[in-house]
Length: 565
Image (cartoon, rainbow, N blue to C red; front, side, top):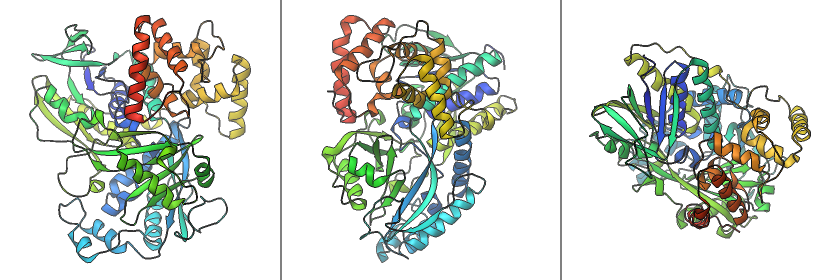
C-alpha cells in the first residue's frame, strides 16, 4: 500500500478507534472523522463492564462467550489502570426454576421469531434457580479456565462479606468474577494516544477530526467542518471506507449513497447513578446481578463513591443520538434495586443523574429485545466512493477481537498479510503499573511530592491516566497547582487536555475527558472556568461563554437529569 493511500474511518467510538489502531499496527495510514465527539455514542452509554456474557450461554453463543472471556483476560493485563476485576453476586430465591425456559432458549432460541410461544403457552417460569445458575457458572468458569480470576462459589444469604440483600426473598447467592471499565471514554482516548505513538513509530499518517462530516465527489471524499460545510478541510480518495458509526450505521450508508437493507436494530439501554449511602453500604465491594420474576436482569454496581444501576433493553426506532431514559425506565431500575435491597428504600429522588444509549445491534424485526445477538459482523458494499465496510454489532469487551477480524479482512482484499499481534501491546497508562496496592500508594505519594499536588488530585488524575500521568505533568510548561473550582484538577492540566485530546466543547471536557459528570455536584463556576480554558485555547470566544454555559446546562438536564448548582 502506498504511503499516500489511506483508510477512512467514519465514527470515533470504541470499534472505530480499535480498527484504526489495528490498521496502524499493520502499516496502514488512517484518517478518522466523527460528526460529534469521540466515544459519544454507545461507548460512553454502556454498563461499563468487561464481561464474558454469562447470559449468552442460554442462547448457545459459546463462541461469543469464549471470545469475550479471552478478551477480558487480555484487557486485565494490557490496561490495569482502567480495567479492574469485579466480583458479582447473583441473588437466588429457588432451587430448580428456570430450567425449562432456559432450555427452550438454548434449543430453539427466542431469536427465531415466534419461538417463545412454548414458554408462554405452558407458563414455564423464566426465573433462574440455584441449579441452573450453578450449571451456567460452571460452564462459564470452564471458558475462562486460562484466566487468573477466582472461580464461582455458592453462599447462603447473610454470609459475611456479601451484599446485604433481602434474605427473606433470596436464600442463596452465587458469586462469580468479571471486570469493570469505569471510564470507557478515557480508554478510547488512551487508544488514540497509542495510535499517535504507532504512527510516529512506523512513519504513518494518522488524523482524527471530530465535529466533521464527509461529502462525495467522484471517487473522492471531502472532509468538512459541521459548522462550515462549504469549507473543505481535505479531499482524498480512500482505499476503503469503514463505517464504524454504530447504531447510526444505516444513516451513514444513506449519506454516502449506499442502498442497503436495514442493518441496525438497536435497543436502548438506560442507567442511573446514585450516591445513596445506604445502598453503598449494603452493596459493599461486590456487584449484584439480579433478575425480576419475568426474567428481566439488572446490574447494581459499585462505582467509586456512588452506585451505577442498569440496564434496560427497549427497542429504539428514533435517532440514536437523541435517546433519553424514560420515567418508566427510571422507575423500573429503582424498583429492581428495592427488590434486592428493600431496606434501602431507594426513590427516583435519589437519582443523581441518568444516561441512555442505543446498542449497535443487528436488525431483528421480531422477538424479545434481550434475545438479539450481541455478536459482531461486517457488511461490504461498493458505492460512489468505492469499497465500504460497515461494522454491525459488537460490545465493549470484544473491541480488540472485532478490530482484528475487520483488519484481517481488509488486508486480505488489499493483498496484504495480517502480522501484528495487538494482544501484547500495552495501553498507554499501563507501563510499569504497580503490582500491589502498597506500591501504587507509594507511587502516588511520590507524585504528590514531586508536583506539589494533594493526594486527592493525584488519585483523580491517576484514575484518568495511570502511569502516563507523570509524563503528562512533566510535559506541561510552567506547571502550577492552581485548581479548577469545585474539582481536583489543575488548570494547567485542563489546558493540556484541550490541546492534546481533541476537545472542542464544554461537554467534551465534562462528559468524556475529565469525567466530571460522574461527580456528585457540578458547579456553574466549574463550567465557567472550563469555558475560560476553551477561550484561552482558541476554541471559544469570550462573548460565547454565557450562552454556551446555559445551553450546556439545558443539555445536562435533558439527557442526564443532572442539575448544576
